[in-house]
Every structure is written in C-alpha cells, then in structure tokens.
Length: 151
Image 1 (cartoon, helix red, strand yellow):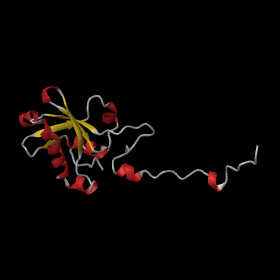
Image 2: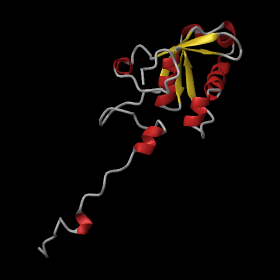
Image 3: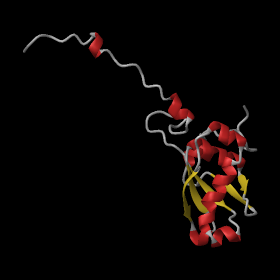
Image 4: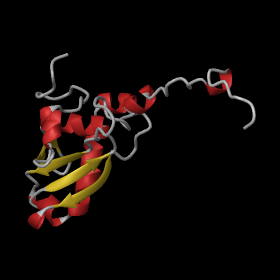
C-alpha cells in the first residue's frame, strides 16, 4: 500500500558509530570487554588503624586526600574533587569496601597495594574476593604502584 521505500537512501543509511573514547578516558566505560562488561570501581580496604575504626567517617576523606595528592591523578582527572563515592564497613570496622569515582582510580589503588594516611598509618587495598573477573583481567590503573603492569 503506497509507494516503496528505498532503504539505501541517505535518510536510512546506518549512522556512524558512537565515539566512546572520551567516556573510556574518563573512566565511565570499561577499558576492555564487550557488551555487558562491568566497571570495577570497588576495592577492599584493610589494615584500618584504631582511629579509623573509631571514626569511620574519616576514611573516605583520607583516601580522597591521598589520591588527590598524587600528581598523576590530578593530571588525568583535573575536574575530580571527590574520588571516593561511598564506603561500606565490614564487621567491627576491621575492613571496608570503598567505591571509587571510576575504574582507573580503583585499579590504581590496587596497583599501589597500600596508601599512607595523613592521620597516620596506612591501609591495604585489593580487589574484593568476590570480584574474580578483576583479578583475571584487571582494569588498567595509572601505573603508580609496584604491581602495575610493565609499560
């Protein structure tokens, strides 16, 4: 009914692919993996000192301060003001799961392995045990730590 449509006309040609490189650079899309790939933004934090256990609200600002003090982080993410999105503590505040602003920051924390806090002491960081995919094919951080892959 009606006239035929030419699907090869200019109006019906496939649109060019979406350039997602900006989203990948900002850490809002995974660096690798196809459809359904997950962003790994959560890290396990352990070796919490007594002060952090007694005042858990200090952990997020402490981690944020330490990350923003790194020139490589400031250079890569100049607009970033709050690297820590959320903190969820485990039993008796002996450990925590920290959600970071993007996958690159999370991978950088794991590459570093530990972070010195301005309130004294340090914390250890790793991928959560339940996130096997991150251990098998880890996202790439900023290459600042001893466990960073060779360039």
